[in-house]
Length: 168
Figure 1 (spheres, rainbow, N blue to C red):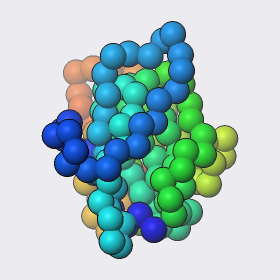
Figure 2: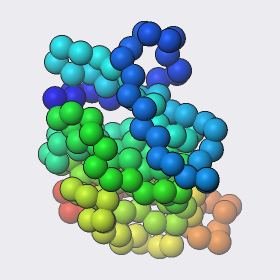
Figure 3: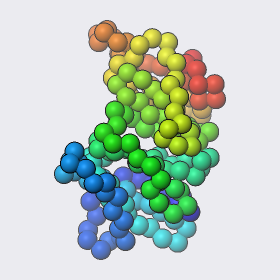
Figure 4: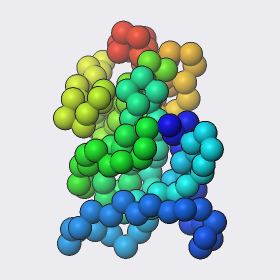
C-alpha cells in the first residue's frame, strides 16, 4: 500500500526502481514528471509524461492523482497501477480534502473528483472565477486565491469548507 507520494527532481539512474507511465500520443511533450512512491517496505519512482503540476493521495478512495501538463493520471493506491487518464487536462491545481475527495481547478472552475475521473462535480462559486490557485488547508477549510472574471485589479481570497463544499 502506497503511503506517501511527492514530486521529485529527476533521480540518478539506479537510485530507485522506476515505472514508466507513458501514453502514446503525437501530442505528448518532451517533458517528464518524477514521482516518488513510498510503501511500507519499498520506495520507487514513477515517470509521467508532461511537466509537473501536482500529486495527491486519497486514503478515503485508495487512489492517487498525478497532474502534469500533458495528462491527469488516476492510479490505484494499493499497487500504483494506472486506472484511467485524461489527455491535455485543463486543470492547473490539485489537492485532496481531509475527507479524501480530490479538488482540481482549471482557470475558471473548481471540480471535485471522487472515485473515478468521470465522477466529477462542479463546485458552485459566489462569482465567476479566474486564475484560481489553491493554497493551504486550515482543518477542513481550503484557502483559495483568484480574480473575479473580467476584474483583474483586485485579487480575491476565498475559503471553501470541504464538509459542505460551500464558500464561507
